[in-house]
Amino acid sequence: MRRRDFIKALTASAAVWPVATNAQQPAMPVIGFLGAPMARGREPFVAAFREGLREAGFVEGYNVAIEYHWSEGHYERLPAMAADLVRRQVSVIAATSTQAALAAKAATTTIPIVFTTSGDPVELGLVTNLRRPGGNVTGVTSLILVVGSKRLELLHELVPNASVIAALVNPANPTLAEINSRELQAAARTLGLELHFLNASTEHDFDGAFAKLIQLRAGGLVIAPDPFYTSRNEQLAALTIRHAVPAIHFNREFAVAGGLLSYGGGSPDTYRLAGIYTGRVLRGDKPADLPVQQGTKLELYINLRTAKALGITVPQSVQSRAYEVIE
Image (cartoon, rainbow, N blue to C red; front, side, top):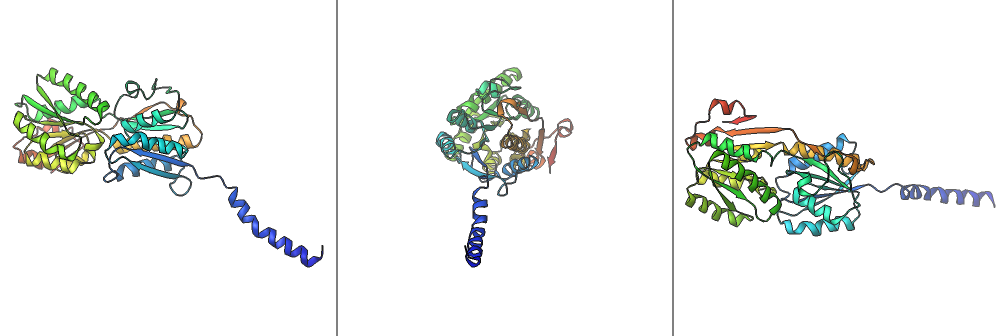
């Protein structure tokens, strides 16, 4: 080969080296993020999830991609969304609600699943054992449901003369509705209260539920933990103000929006823990060997402005237990 031809051939082959090198780069892992509520209002939770991922060494857009699927409160969409993530062969599914976790578990026995739930993962059938989950599923459970009785007790402390209490539950989410109802019924019997359940699974149901609450002359309202209700904190708080109903929910946003009380687990921190576990799975840890974690952060928020408007005196003993008093 003549020297000129050799140089041309060498230059041509060098030109394709970067292409060949790029082609051999491993594909970026993809997380399938499966959420039940509306995306709007969930930014703090997603941010906490990303924070957990960063702690595990993964940054969205840099060394991991995330496919977000939100059912917008339509739980019946979750099985199809989970099946779509399975078809896409994502690296791991982050199922960030009880219904999403159940849908993901039903969709695959091979793709790792990291869940967040407010219930008992064993009772829900997500895992067989908290310490050694087995299979392809692990995750984090919060203290939202297990303190349902405490919410009723707190409300009873502030309205001790109310003998009739209502509870708002979502029949479109039967798993959580059943757990919520059972927990509250047991607490109501202990406290000697008459408890009535009101159903609401869409925004259109709220007015009817509150009309029924007034008809029952209920002296207070417990709003059960549910992703749909969480995404409607401001609307529910406004309704309790409009109807002058002392009410308690589980997250801070409800109290900030004007609800009287909120008490429950720190959900954003639960998402952070789920992000850490998701990162560990991406690094090669098996869900079967990762014990189910339990959030330990319980916070009480009191809106004193609302209490004054309702003519309720919040005892100092209750205020001293609050993580934050909104004045």
